[in-house]
Image 1 (tube, rainbow, N blue to C red):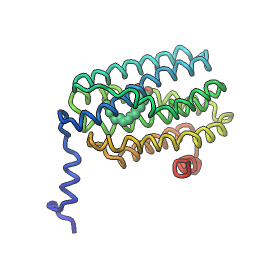
Image 2: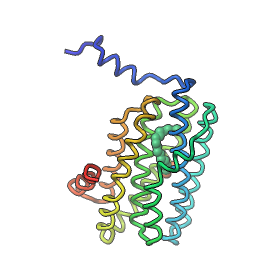
Image 3: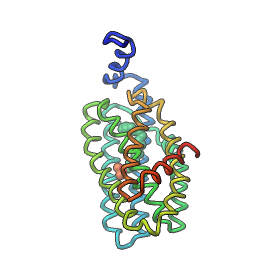
Image 4: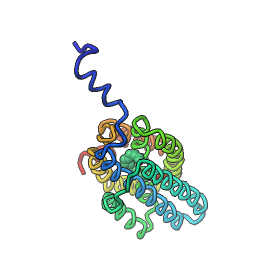
Length: 239
Ligand code: PL3
Ligand code: FE2
Ligand code: FE2
């Protein structure tokens, strides 16, 4: 039987401790994770503006969402400055390239459903899970900023949910195909950040679990059944 003194238990406590934010290894991992977040916020801004070009009557509302993303980007830039870290932007651009390419292709084809699934569901659920797991192990400055950001991200997720829900009859098939094409990419992205995230004391399984929770809840709101959602989630295993 496990007792309080058993190694498994004390390791579990150690994982909850705050990291030493001043070490070279922390700063090195942070230079990539922070760059991913900055690039993600910048691309989110651009993506909402682009979606506005496909939905002209929504352009004003989408421009508001886009503005929030720029504010997030500035906040996370300040987090790096505060720690004396320079974000590795070329790394982050490459990290987003496959998803970015799929978004641009869908945009060129006028596929609103695909664009919204990529940005407002998959990327926002990814961001929400990452920020949730980061907040308890962040330095105090970054924690405050991230807490403010995560509230906004729910507004963005909600926007995507509502549009897809209102258009479900006509977008179901495109939604399933877009999910098949993009959920495997998000799974790979979660795997790629795992090593650096661990240095920040963020646990990979917690990240995955939180992502899947936001993703499932979003699809439930859209109006899909549990079975349909399970089938969509299975795309991450097959892809
Ligand atoms: C859209 O609003 C935001 C898109 C951002 C994508 C974020 C990916 C997160 C990767 C892991 C980050 C941990 C949090 C660290 C913050 C400096
Ligand atoms: Fe954001
Ligand atoms: Fe967002």
